[in-house]
Image 1 (spheres, rainbow, N blue to C red):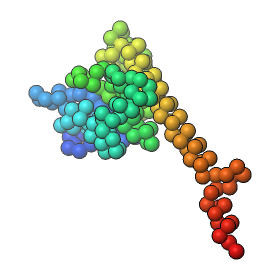
Image 2: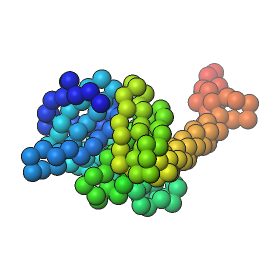
Image 3: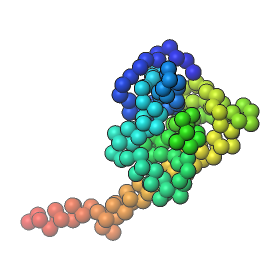
Image 4: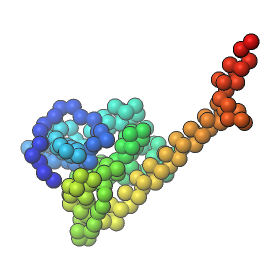
Length: 187
């Protein structure tokens, strides 16, 4: 990854342009290295704090998003998170989020991956940047599939709700309820 545009920032919420939030040793502390499509930053907050703050920014707590994942796909450990499903912001951890070496990756931006060795995987992002992470390829692939499953289930629920509301506000002839009311009011 290139680090030309790297700067320290105090405030950060994950956006549709965020590729990854990774831990970085900064002196004796762990900070977050945030990689976007065309930029890179360092935040004095840990990656988990960035994830939690981003969930709150989009109207839910991290615990609420985690509980939603459990309800939808019955995953409780290394659970992928729908930070903002309306903007297709789905992130997944490479290891337990409680471990300091956990990296959070954007599902949307992973284009490909390949096994480097038994304990490392090379990931290619949408902007053609690559990163080697200390996670087996099978574990990475499992996390990627879990996130796809979460995304699919959530989109199905949203579409089902849209269909139900369409039928609720439309009669058998396809006329909207508001159009039917206006026919009776006219004299």
